[in-house]
Picture 1 (cartoon, rainbow, N blue to C red):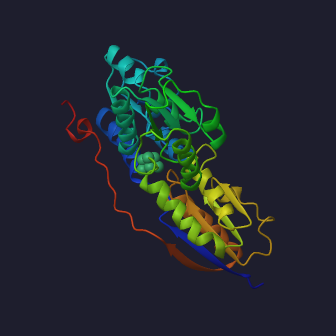
Picture 2 (cartoon, rainbow, N blue to C red):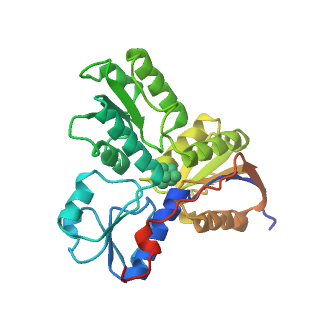
Picture 3 (tube, rainbow, N blue to C red):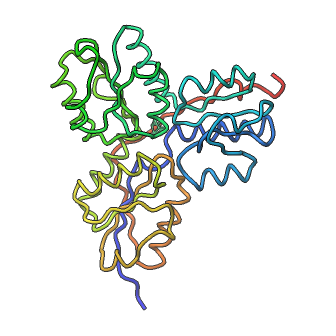
Length: 318
Ligand code: SF4
């Protein structure tokens, strides 16, 4: 039986960003340097495949520091941690390595700088997301107010509208955030903040590629984890950009083939924490069912690299 033809649009850039790459490298190098177990507070990046792979090599994932012994190294995830966490690790004289993405650390520094200048902070982010918890935890309780929507901006109660600054989560929807920033500036004209927002290059680039690809696709699949903020945003961006069916899949086994019945084109991308091997697996699943022609939709080239912390670049015993 001949297979039906399918055009498979492949977004570029997609998948791993420099912060995720560095965080994984940190865990692997820590295991190489200090042996197992190495403890990791919170999923190092939001991807079960990556986490399971590191677990098999000897990483132990925990939610809180009190689950770690004092005498084994602990790594903090790419999303960042509240200040109290490294402070507690230092108090316990633990060996810890911070895998917070440098672009998240930059937001932490911004928040601290504004606070030092006497400004109250507003954070645009998702309640409960580890990055939001980490950024809000850079300042004393109550100093950072969270807004998630334009409606929240109308409701938020501030100390002094003349003394305000804002920061954002790095993995938000660029378009939604622009609306929230505009609402903040309309209600609090004196508010200070970054030039646009703090959304990182990887989030922006992956959303741009999806916008370019979505109008050509009958369906779109985003390879990513259900707890990955930037992956979920890619699904939303795809739908809004005109793709009638956009879904998040963790891997090929999650594809709902019945929902794809009759399609002639599909777009594929991956969130910043999804490894390329899972994208390959999805492409192979399409090749098994269709006569596939792959077309790359490239909207940017990335060459960002972040160094791992010095402690891991030094030989063991240092
Ligand atoms: S998505 Fe952006 S902020 Fe998050 S780890 Fe990647 S580069 Fe860093």
